[in-house]
Structures are given as C-alpha cells and as structure tokens.
Length: 565
Image (tube, rainbow, N blue to C red; front, side, top):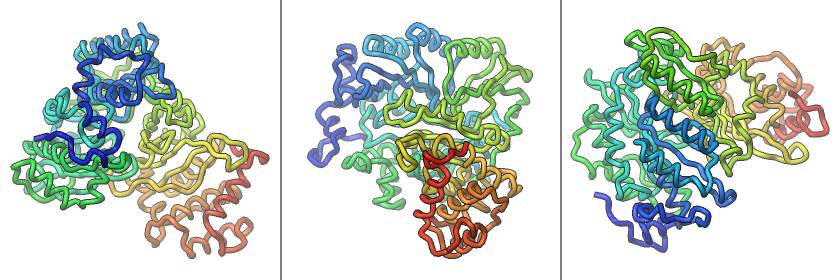
C-alpha cells in the first residue's frame, strides 16, 4: 500500500518537498484555473505529470507528450492528431518509448489541446515526471516470427494499475521505465529499462527473467528471478510499490532505481520487493534471446505482410499521418509505434506501400535536438546528414545520437553512439561529437565505451567511415559481433588512437582479435603496437594516451588546418 511522504522533509530534494506540500493529483485537479502565461518552476514540475512540458528558458513555448499503450495507435487517433496539428501548426516527434510529442504549443492553446487529446480517448498522463513511463515491448509482439508470448495483455494490466491513480501520479522517487518482451529476438534491446521482463524458459515452461536497474548509461542487471506469465503483473506491482516505499528521495541525481540497487545490492532490494507480493517464484531460467534477423521483417507468422514507415529521424508531418491512417484503414492494418521512432503497419494481405519511403535508414535513433529541447547542443535530426548514412544503412549499424549527456538517443545501447556537444579544442567554439563504441546490446552484456575524443561535426563522416571500413574488413556479419570479438578486446584509448592514426596516415592496416581484457586505458603492449604500426606518426611508445589523442586530433581538425570531410 502506498504511504504518505512525510518523514525527514528537510532531507528531501526540492521536488519531494513540493510533493509533501501538495500532491500532484490535487494540483492538477485545478488545471483549468492555471494561468499558463505566468507559471513558475513548481507549476512546471506538476504539469509534467499531466504530460505538459515547459522550460524557463522558453517560458512561452510548450510541448505535449502522448502515451500509447505498447505503442499501439489507431487510424482514428492518427487522424485526430493530424487535425489538431494542422489547426495549431504543430510538429510531431516520435520518441524512443513508442510515444509521441507535439511541439510548437504556447500558453494560449496548450490547455485546449491537452483537453482535446485526453477527451478523445488518448492519454497524456504520467508521460513526464516521476512516474511509470510508457511501458514498451517489441513492435512485433504477438505477431512476429520470433513471438512466443504476446505480452500486450500484461501491459494493459500494468498500465491500468498505475494510470490516472492519485497515489501514483508523480509520487515515485523518480521515473521508472519498464520493458517486457515475449519474443526470442527483438528489433531493439530493452536492457536500458529500470525493469525488464525478458523471455526465458525453465522446466519446459516459457516465462520471463527479471532484470533491474537499467538506464541510458547502464544495463539492467539479472535479478535471478524467473516468473510464469501469470506472475508478471503482480511482480511489476511489487517493484513499483517497493520503489515508492524505499527508493531514495534525497539528491535528485541519485534517485533512479539504479542508485537504490547500487546502494543496497540486488539481494537487498529483492527482499523489499518480496514483501510486496505473495508469489512463489523460481531462480532465473534460460534466457531465450538471439540476434534479430532483419530479413524476417517483411512477413509475420500468419504470413501477412508488414509495411515499415521510416520517419525523418522521428519527425512526421500531419499530411503523412493522414495518408498513413487512410492506408491502414483501407488495408485493415494494425498500426504500432516502434521504440526505434518508426511506424509499422501489420497484417497486410500483400506487400503494398502507401508511397515511396524517402528515408531508407532505419537504424538511427536521434533525440529531439536543439530545435525542441533546451538541454540540447545540436539540431540532431538535421545533423544526421554528417554521418556516413549509406554505410550505416548497408550494414544495418545501430546508431544512437544524443545531443547532450542525458542520453535520450541511447548512445550507449547501440553499435555506434554519439553525443553532440560544443568544444573549443580545435579553435573557436564549434559543434563536435563524443564517440562511443563496443555496445553489446542484444544480450545486455556491455554498454558502448567513450573513446575519449570529440570529433568536429564536419569530420564525423570520415572518422566513422574509418571505423566502419575496419568492420567491413573483419568479415563479421554484424557490427555487434565485431564489437564483441574485436573492438572490446582493446582499450578504448587504443581504439581512438588506432582510428586517428589510420585517418592521418591513410594506412591500410586492420585489427585482429586481441587477448587483452576490455579496458579503458591504453596498455603498454598497445602503445608498442601503435609505435610499430605508425612509427612515423608515433616515434616512441612512451606516451600518455590522452595527450596523444589530443595531438593527433588537433593536427587533423585544428581550425587553421584543412578539415577532413
């Protein structure tokens, strides 16, 4: 049972003290009386629980986030959204939680649009703030060739338990992201979730292994719990109730479930979770996960077809929504939003399409960017043009592109990760990107590692091309396998210096699997190898890696020098 938040209010962070003074549900009951042209920080915090976002830097601009259960959306809902977007000249952005954001609202129309969306049967509730966010699954849940257990009914029960309930609206210590999949292979990984139920088997019974504590920079950890399908919802409820009761409410940056796990350990938090249910469960089963084969995506297990609409890096126009809604209605297709920011039309009788899809790159996830987010440094969605898109498409390389270290592009849960930032390292302040490599995301084994480098925007194409050419030469079928077998047998500093040296010298040399463990700092053996391979560039093996990375990158990209493009 959820209890009142009232002890040690002096030690609570500002958001928790606000909840003690007034519960979000009580505040939002009077939402129609709010003067949206005069809101302050406290109002902004409460409004997030209703799906309304506003930032003090642009206090006259608002965004609205829409919740779609497991990403399922109807053609009627699409037409309603398109009508609203056209009426108010808004932008549609799809998110990595199979949701949708409407941008371009202001204090004159935000309440009107908020009411129209929620009155139409859709929901904006608990899509921001300290809530259980939209519960996600694989876009092919129940219908794909890899599907073993359809999880949508369980997601409906989970959402029913928390959505629009006064005791849950905004009252968790921090956001909780939940993923569940009954598929043997998933189009995207779910190990970045706070709570993930992954398909597993024990004693010839298919069910779910539990993973806890993931976030944008961390992998969820195996909780050594196997659940039968009938137990999943009760265990979800126990985790949410326990996190509410025992999760940290002090320093705001230390309140995710990850930090609770870090402090008390897996066995410690499991004991508290177990007090909130009466289940008798087993230890972990055999995880039923394999690498997704994208060649299977055209057909479902009932032999009907799928049309995948690849958005413009999460952007969709109202006119496209209308066309797609009519297409879905005409062909009686089921519409689903993917966590990869694309739209899927399932159950087509033939391999038909509504129009030619101009964006053929389906493996890049990009955050909202500076056009729509005050935390962002880059206009990420347009700046994807600086990437080697043809090579990324050719090899189905998973790329996560964030424009700040909050990581909304999930840059550490992919093959190649990027964070857009600004730096003066190469002269005047300019856009540059941090580069991450080595993610083993399918099975939740390793997040991508930072290469200790910032690459100027104009040089991203050439730097990433060197990396991808290395992958091509390796003959591995998947970049993730290349990461596991080659990249992750070297230190991150060595990889950075290796690619910089190859770019500088145009030398055609390639890596083989190494026996050294995965590390961040360059080993002496790696220094020796760099000296032997690139002796004209690195005449000595006695160097500090960070200094050498700085020297080589500046020699390539200093403003006064010719920029590699």
